Length: 295
Image (cartoon, rainbow, N blue to C red; front, side):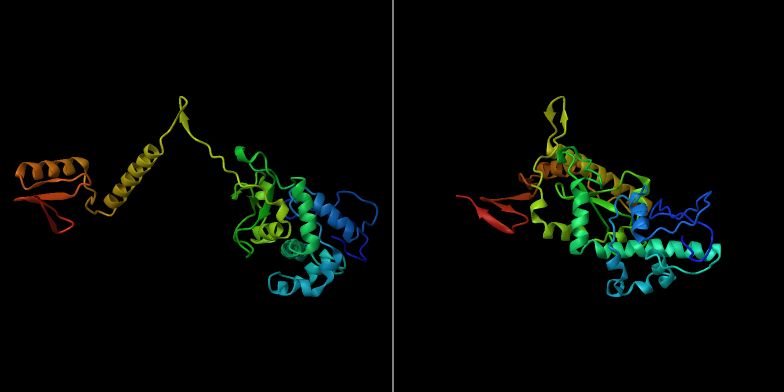
């Protein structure tokens, strides 16, 4: 942090989630980096690869910052710090709070900036270079990803990565990236990018992985039956935990019921498991409630 009029140096180095200011351990000169230098330091720091550079003109236009004064603590001090006009002799605790607010302010402004013409162009260049990573899905053939937020409200969800080929989202590999607030990118950025640059939309992947056993494809109905059995057992456990009777009719009970109907001579079960009552000269389906008279 630069404190003008003070003869000691604080070298700004942004690291971590949105960067931290670290004092230089030893320096015999007064370091006063300008906004361009601070911006480059921030973008080049580990963990900040997802962010693009915000133009100084955009930051100094108060219209672009509308409403952020209610979202950021020490808003004016944080803005002065980000735009390199901070001039306050504050104690360590207050400086730490202002630095934290400055990082938060930069992130919120970043979410607005990247949906502008200039911001989209900068993020497009990073997207083409795969700075945000590549899709881990094998069939997507390492298609580049885009950062996105699941919520526009800060502090709710961390940043996710969106693949336009499989249209799915993934968690970042790095813990540094996974700690970034998703609100710093917003939930609409990736959609706006492809609306502005429709030629970037890839063809949807039609290939799907087919599970096989010794070369034979697993039948879909078998997987469905296993899933139904598993869900059935889970429901049984839940019902027992609530001390409720088991509402499921076991297979053996159904077979006994079918045998009883056959032995009674009343009728039989049709192919759909519905009772068909016998009648003189005809048949009647119970669920239909009508008689089909024979010749």
